Length: 449
Image (cartoon, rainbow, N blue to C red; front, side, top):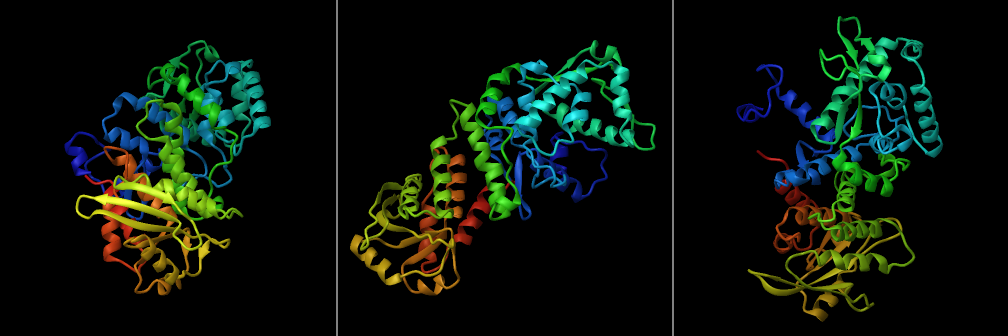
């Protein structure tokens, strides 16, 4: 906080602050998809990494991706779990809707949209019909509709404040929305709602002391990009929830890394984030996690992952009963050229119960490889006894994918560093290296000064 104040990057409400103030600010950045949290550390999302690379020419598209990514339920919002909706996919869809002239007024937003818990095609069509019918009403008729709601001042003052300052104006500052004056709307009359039992009123004025109605529209520079997102990712999709994810970390990874990268790759033809990398890692994770009668699918998905390493010379799928699944040739400046075996293991129950170390050792001798990496979605505790005193290590598939993702996104050549894994393995033979690699990821990529 002191550093930000010294740089005039943060002012706050006064000089009297606590650590909790900064924690709240960082949590807000998580909600707006600029970073995510793991333990007491914060990590950049792909759009933030673009800012950190000084790619400001792409700033409006990056913020469009952030907005498009926000869903409910959110890992960083206390909004009720009753809300199961890609809320801002819906807003972008509405702002592309010709039937409502690609615009929304604040009073329409708080009247119709803020209370939607879910959306499908039928509800969407009803929503369009209701908005069009609402626009035919007089100001007095609209006002009567608001006042017919119990405790309407309490309800709509809060809604107006949140919509106005936590979304419309923030994403106007982020170059996504234009705020357009419209003095003809409601005959220049404003809606004002008393904020609790105070003298404060929340209104739909375009600015404080500038009592003119207005509407939001998408920035003209983003219309084509927004249409591409809308055409490829439906507002009617079911959002990610804790119930549909194996773990909280998995859910956050999907929302804050892979999903955002999918959006980036589809709207930016010249994007530096290689769509191929995303597809490779997504496919490997999917094949590791879900059972298939075709047991080779996991092996086939794993070989391209090893090709993402800068030090890789060759990754060949062998997959014979008497040989390794994948034979990789690596070359590092320190260790020169060497070979490693990679074995993909998956069981219908998802957790690997046992490993045959003698067979894997025979595969090492057959190929002259230094060690074998056994990769599986999860390992039972007994597998560590199985590999004791053998040149074998175990590694969870999702951690391998996450390491490659962060490495590729942050490297000069969009490839991952294998040397750090090689050194970890040499110092941890016959152990599981999953947590060690997670520590490398955390130490390299959490947000520092």
